[in-house]
Image (cartoon, rainbow, N blue to C red; front, side, top):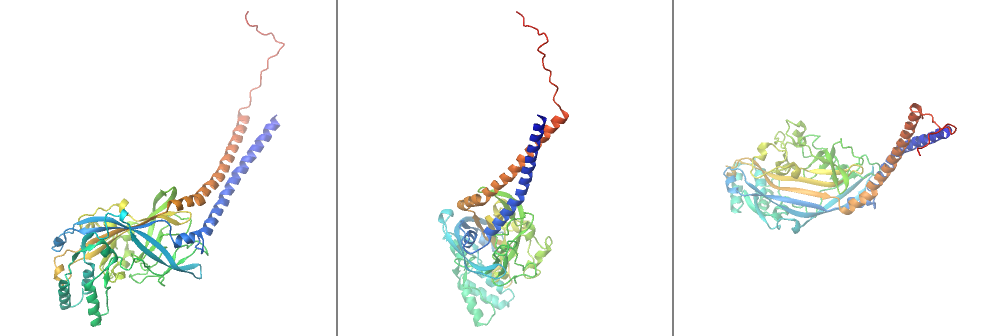
Length: 493
């Protein structure tokens, strides 16, 4: 009997150890299998599912804009603070299509991406014909170009402004300010510059996103993942250049990271994620904020830290973004005139989120909120795919008094918001379901198997240990059997 118990203990103990070891081994095996599977599936191989989703994204992308209506433009010309009323959203469906795709050496591919916008009345507060008052960017552009020209020339141009009915503030439709309209002043400036052999020109059409609809922002070369995924999606060159030439330092001219839609797999949340934004003419570094769950999928959320847009006192590296050199803006502001044909355009986060109090208080009507106005990228950590994105930016104009233009004499310098936008995309229900069935559910199954084996092995080992301890320290009491020959007490009659 004792021998049988001993054999049983050995068998159960050995089985527990085997299951425990097998479960631990499977952790390594399954992890390797998952890594290999992800690497094989995300590579941008022509014809693969990842290639198709990358070239023609199926998840809906929306481009929303809010206009800032200046309700006291006459008073602003006399030195008052601008009073703003936000109008929006005006929503567009954004369709992206990559073309001119070609594979290069060293595991890279090149492409262009056409972006088209389609107005969505049912998702908007009004029509594209809605009007609002904003600053006259063409006029400010001309004034800025002539800042250092002789006084007599400025006076001539101001007479031209009056003749054409141009004012510092004018009424625009949503469509015109967004997509462009012909401007007589700019046409005359170009004609004058050509006649007098001046080395500058401005577009005859003006609009914040003029030439952006049904167009592309240049030729990209990225790592395809075919020769390894360590640099997957990262930009090698943009328009044939490996670095920018807008800014004043090597660091600020770097082209870092991807386009913000794909990253190398197996994301380490402690690492900064970089992306290049042609809208901002610079690269951005995003840091981990928290984990969010979108449609049943856990994602690592990355956001832009305030220090990235801080002034040079807080972040000396940002001195390279001062334009012209030495002319540095307060925290939260980026002068992009160097890449916007010298229009006095300044970018920021919506409602001046992250900006100095003086900037926020320079106008009336803003209410910055991190929850509403912060940009984010939510990345699935195993595949490196961005499944939920919100790029939020604000377009502003620097409005100030410039000597020689009497209409600006009384204006107090202000960074004036024009619009803010939210370009967002979330994985579709179908793609989320496919991802969960093809990736998440399989990973959960393998984890269930390996941890189930480990758990069962541990339970068996614990049971064997408990039995051994009980046998060793709590031996069974000897049995006291009744002797049939001894007299017994008979029950009472």
